[in-house]
Length: 248
Image (cartoon, rainbow, N blue to C red; front, side):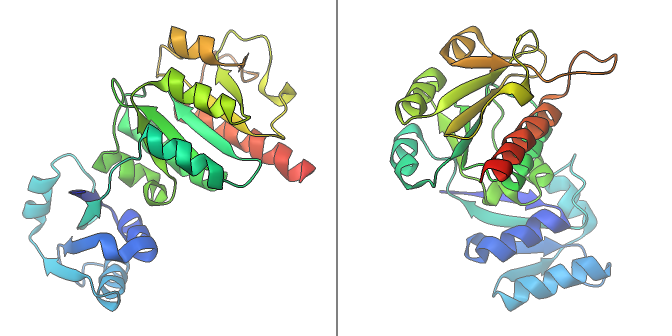
């Protein structure tokens, strides 16, 4: 377990609410900077978390490119779970479970946005490959707005092997591909399902694509032929949630 940084009023508050025991300390520029920051300070102190006052320049040196909103928290991070833990955890998920797989995303903002959508749509787990993929950086946590602490993230050595494990557990694996003839609303998500989204620009890697049971595209009515991966993920997860709400 290592210590990591998270920044921004909402993400830090979310971590305090969900798992204050992991927060080592909260660093703020000044207690009375604004009412939202003061409320965060009060929240931290009520939960027994140390609060330290720092100069704005000190916070900017810690995270030079971050819009930190006057607060940074240091917390204990157990890190992503692995493939072995995934195999064990599957047995405890309620049916029909849903897994989101992100194949080699490079942008931390996209990862964070996907985690946020995953939390909103009740995804049981998010899986990313260990190599050639962005990790859970401070920027990703900021965009996730607390979802990085609520959605289990697994980082696996072999993505194709992980997909096979999910298939063996009774899931159907759907991969997003712009050229696919089947469209998202025509798929059946009433049972265990895995949604696989590809890398920005390049989409799914060949082996990942071949490991999918079916491919789908999102119907496009305008002149733009593609969507940002985080937007496409949000649309796809909403469709799964919509279908299950109707059948449930």
